[in-house]
Amino acid sequence: MTNDNSWDYLSADEAECSQAFMEELSSQSWAAGLVADIKRNGGITRKNKGRLFELRFAYSLHRVGIQPSYEIPGEGKSTLDFGFTSGDQEWAVELMRLEETAAIKESTRKFQQGSDVAISSLLLHTGASDPRQSPEAETLKAIERICQKCERDDRPIKFPRPSGALHTILVDSRELFFGPDHYDCIHIALGGEYVPENVRHFWQGNVISGVFNKRTSLHGARYAQERVHFIGFVNEQSYQFEEFGKVIRLVANPNLFADDEAARAAVAKWPLQSVDLL
Image (cartoon, one colour):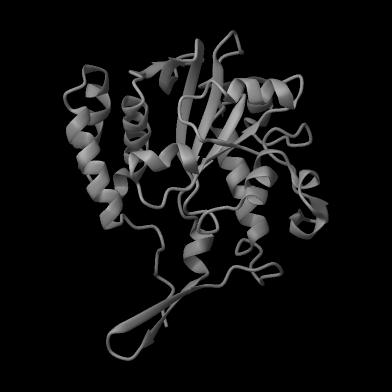
C-alpha cells in the first residue's frame, strides 16, 4: 500500500478535445496569445491543465460567435483572462483551477489487487486524526484560494471596482470532492447558513462562511465581496464544447445584487446557456 497516488491527471478525452480546439483557434487572431502561451509551456500536458481550461472556455465562446479579448487590463498592473460583450453586457472573467491539495494526496491510498489491478481509495472524512484530511479543511482551502485571486500584498488585484462590466471567477472544480455538488458550491461561495443543516461544515465549532459572506475575513475576501459578481464552479466530464455552459454552476454575490431577480437578469446575458444559477 502506498500514499503517492494522485487523482489529478490529464485524461485522453481532455487531451484530445483540447488539441482539436487549439488547432481550430490557431487561425483566430484574438486567440494567438493563449495558443502561444500553451505551446510555450509544453503544449497538451498535465502541467498545462489550467491553461487548457482557459482554452476550452475560449473555444466555447468562439462557437457561440463571441471573440473575447485575452489578458485584459485589471486592477493595478494585473490582468484578467478574458473580456467580452454578450447581450449588450460587458463581462470580465478570470479562470482558476482548484488543484489537488497535499492533504488529498496524503489521504489517498493505493491497494494492489492481484498482479494487474491497482485500486485507489480516498480516506477523507470528518474527524480525521489529521484535520487537514477532512471535507471541512478542503472547503476552507477552496474558499481561501478563491479569495486569494482578489488580493496580493494587501492590495486588490484582478477586478477593479464595478463600473458596468460583470465580474466573474470561473473555477475548475473537478479536483474538489471529485466534482462538488450544488450544496458544496453554495457553501463555498456563501457559507454554511445557506445550505441545509445536515450538509453544513464546521471548523473549530463555527460554521464555515463563504467567499461572499461578510463574516469571512481571509486575505482577498473583502475585495471579492466588493468586486466579484459571480463565482462559477465548472465540473467538466466530456470536454466537448457543448458541455461547458451546461456544467457551470453560478453563485451570485448578494452584496452586489438588489435581489434574486436582478441576478437572474444578469445571468440571462451570460453567453453560455444553459448555465445553472444556484
